[in-house]
Image (cartoon, rainbow, N blue to C red):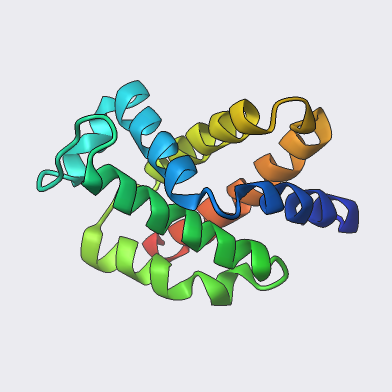
Length: 141
């Protein structure tokens, strides 16, 4: 459960993401494929080379979905229900990948926010992304 202060930190940091969704998303997805190469198995139809259109497009989709979650911090289950269904029933993505991508996204945030990515912001995003991962994995049970 996010505190009011953590929600504020998430919203404030998210303002720095706006306008850079494609770049941040591409960096996070590219990092995930590099650090966790097993995640590539779900993307056999993608050009997985650094900064490819496939990676940029998918990264933008991921960050836009996170943006929707940021706008609905108090109702993540409802907001992400359709995405959870898609990943569980159609794509059948291993839910561990949500956590891996979350870690990669936090690295991207840290790189781009620099000193503004304080330990408090890190903790807030860690809790938020863990909640998003849990909601996305709900339908697997």
